[in-house]
Image (cartoon, rainbow, N blue to C red):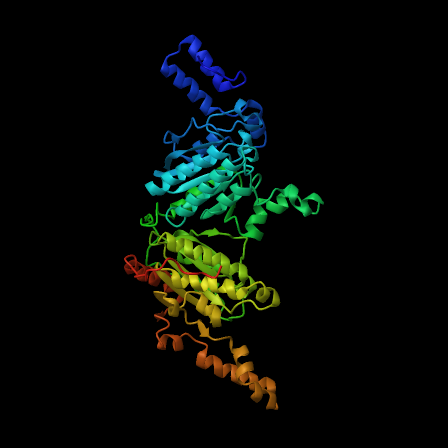
Length: 534
């Protein structure tokens, strides 16, 4: 005799099947139907009214048509507390599996907000952990769609333990396979932590929110000083926290961004990224560069224009555009090969390195290194940003992260000095002394300990104090310093630059250097890992 709970939908279906003696195939069809529509009608309606898709709709929008293979569709939670035994929906609030994205196989999952508000219970977390482990073993990228209110509190410790297992496997995946997170709803607590372990986090502008703690525990929200969107919305995480690498207009845009990022990445750390044939000639001269960059080293310009002029088809996918915008990072292609770009932005803070810029670039360099993507560095940097805020905020430690990331990276590293390369910032921007493979400069390059004005004020301080005409003496000494150190040839004579080139030849010279470096291999001394100054 079969014992059932009268209020359980699944059990009612089981009773009906027994009484009507349906065939096993019909029984499977019935269960499959329940698994495909586990959320209650009102929750799904509310989801649609808010302008959001269901979990399955998001998966089907992400994956190529008819390619999705679902895993664990019939998983149910095991909790009997708080009357949860009366409601055991199939899937337990998450859809998971694998399929094709633009013709390449990926692993994916999507939280279902219509089931327990997407909260992470024991089986929910175990299901994501299982598909993540599958991705690691199969060496396939993961795209996760997050839309859940954190831990399922009424499941207690079992949910917490399963979440720990999930976080552990995500850490194991890190650096081995690409992980991309799409935050398309409110994501808080442990779900936010899990999403934050990804290589790239994309938030939708309207509904994407991330919180470590519920906004209702934040004093500023309670008092009405700020609202939830200001605290943890997409724009805040894109410009203030640096969590979001990009903000999407809507859910479809978020999916397109994820696909574009993935197009620059290999399937795993031992694979090569995909080459894309381009109609852009490899030896194309970049004649516009001489007009973009002013001869006066104190005048700003837009480094984005320089990058686009050099790369294939002028296509540059900038990441973190609203965060630490004194430095630029992103993906492009050279001769069809994926490359990472790191570049000072002279029109913001004169291109100085500060705390946020150092963290932003260090993170990106290490991501490129993990997936064997060469890094091209464009240098126009007067130094590290001075000030008490920077010093007390730990600019020494954060600046060291950037330097460490370049020195640690074993990928091909190519550097172009367009104008200034001063002091410690010159060292931090992929110099020859930190193992850069190919370093070139334009004739306008200045490689020095500091700018001429500052150097003269220090070196010739007493002479200036004793001078009858301080202004003329200062001008003469500045000119003397610039003639001696203010050009790239001193560095070239010492082997710190491989060449001095005309700006128009930048693209050709980079591609010529990049081609043999495709087979670059470096021996790394055995150790557990380095101790980057976090």
